[in-house]
Image: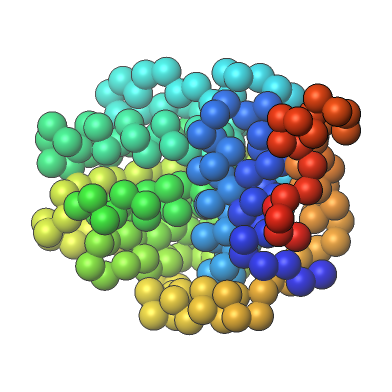
Length: 240
């Protein structure tokens, strides 16, 4: 089926909210799914996988400390941990102008990219790379407020299991990151993909969309006189 970027973002946000994700995580994840999918990068399946492992555990979104630049995700997902991890590496770079965070056993690492991209406009650059599942070479991206986002390495598949991730962060304007990974796609091509997605919508698998929709429906409340009085029910737009 074909859906708009707005539908993807809103439905995934509602799915996270319906599953009981902590406040703010649902908004960040919804925006991240739309960002990735609009650039031809698989994300809808990742958020469904994260939801199926979620089980309503608030601890799945808590990072605790990142002592000595290390963090063990224990198989938890960047869908939930991503905002905290990016905030932690930026916080460290604020006092040192640059920082590195090594993350063990993180699932859905591609969600770190749009979360980092949202901070490039505040003067930060990032280099994010991971290996998983016996990959011969790594996958990742470099992000800069001027150059935009450049995908690196092997994007032919996204990791189905935990990945070993390295995140570098530094103040924009410093020497560019020196990556050993080859360029897979530049900012110009990514921009063209997004423009095409906005124009034509995105094709998504019916089975995945149905799973997202089932989670999203948990945000609905039974119709009653009280719920109507509180504003429940259809809005003025069919997209509400």
